Each structure stands twice: as structure tokens, then as C-alpha cells.
Image 1 (cartoon, one colour):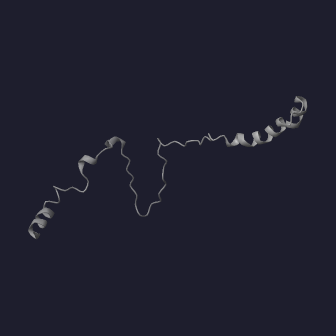
Image 2 (cartoon, rainbow, N blue to C red):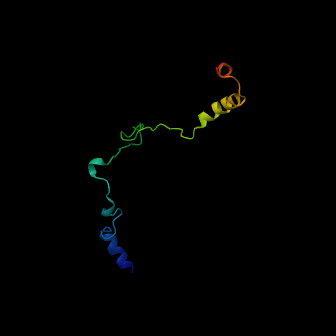
Image 3 (cartoon, rainbow, N blue to C red):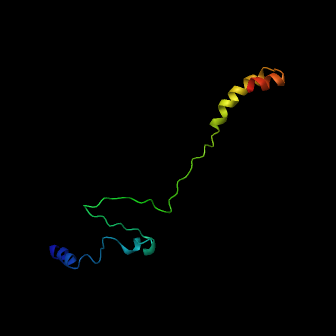
Length: 88
């Protein structure tokens, strides 16, 4: 059994590679590699394809406060001129 393990080691694990070739999903021209040394400073660069997305609030929470202010005024049944004056 030990002889088998030494034989596999001498073959440099050809039958069981560390990274199987079937896992090569990214084309070589699209791969990004970085060379860092221990004494150099690292200045990370943003990936060009990554974009900042703006957050859109679609819950209409900004409309809730004006509705809470306008609805009681209109509910009182005041004349339209007075409603306009109160709302402004």
C-alpha cells in the first residue's frame, strides 16, 4: 500500500491534478491576475465592468407623509380657496 502511494507521488499526481482541467470556465484572455510582492503597496483597481447601481425606492414611503398632511385638510370640507391657502 505504501509503495502505491510513493508511486503516485513520483508520478506527481498526474491522475489526480490539484485543479481539474474541466473547471477552466474563464477564457485566458478574460482572466485577471495580479502580481504582489511583500514589500510593495497594494493599490486595488476597480473592475471596469462593475458599475455602481443607484437604489430606487419603489415603496412610495416618500408619498406617505404628504398624504397624511393633505388628506385631513381635504376631509374637513373647507372651500377650495382656503384649502389651497392652507396647503401652501
